[in-house]
Length: 433
Image (cartoon, rainbow, N blue to C red; front, side):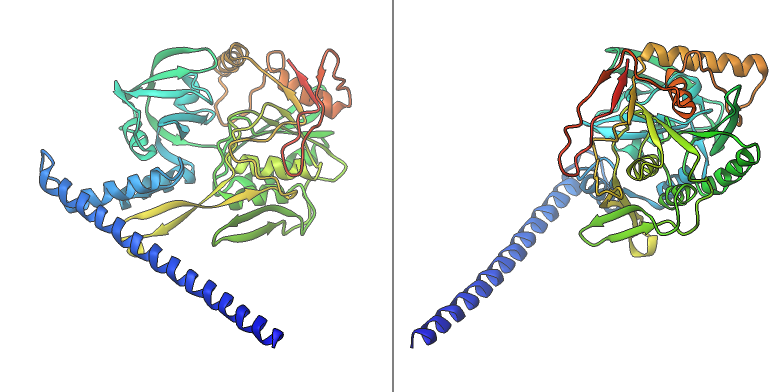
């Protein structure tokens, strides 16, 4: 009898929980219906009472943009025309000034100026906040709207009002628009140490292929080590990040894991490593190192295949997926669907990677370095397709050379304790100030 009662009570509990779940589902559906009613009323009010006539198409586009842009700085709605512009950005040939931007606290922020572009030559830097475009306040603008205002006919100028937080100053700069041709990989051999140097500018469709060609040339020259410069690399295509990591790791190694509500994927290397395991590799990083650049850097750091030197990276570990609306006829949604995780399971969105050896450079030091490199290019008539270095002013590069040479000793360096827990980011082993 006691067992029977327990069974009956258990059945009531199960039925009760199912009933409660159904009630909750019904309540959620009803609440969703109510909010759709709110939306339709707001739509009716805007369409019929706004001071100027506005089309249903424009109202729906505005609603779609607002809905996505409030989720995070990377989700957005594209009209077919805007999608074309976005795709041009990732192919390495587009019109504009050559910057990658994000949104922070309602303002567009420079993730990185792409080397060799008008923005780079004008002295824009990672972390610069674009306050105005041609005198128009940018607060509350979407990324698409900011980009649209910055772009224009090549040869014309756009005026940007910039706030630079590190220097607590605001200034205005005029930047000439141009058709942007991005050379994804530049290289040289650092002498007399005979170390290979590779600058990866952006992860576009041919980046891994070009990098493999450069690595083959450097190996033929029997360089003793390799410095990969990912500073101010705003990222790009995920498949290229995986293909670049593939050049440094054995076949079958996890490069990155993707985890979200509906998206779960583990991407691994597919080929034997191109770079010999015995060759030392240093990766240079800074605040402009973002997205695909962080995937490569974090992966090689996890496997201790490369030593990271420089400054904390940007911290964009989010996956965006393009989903067409009605086959793309009515636009496309770019939405964050998952987070990236390094092979060790680190998810560092908004945190960024901490380099193994932290070498900080002040704004004044960066400014002097940019100017010196620019002067060298002009004096020696060197185009932006070639790498130009200044080891005297680039102390991050100097430390990278010392690491390859086995001569790096953190003299006068403040050591940090590794106090990380679980998957949290470890502090740098040393800091050069």
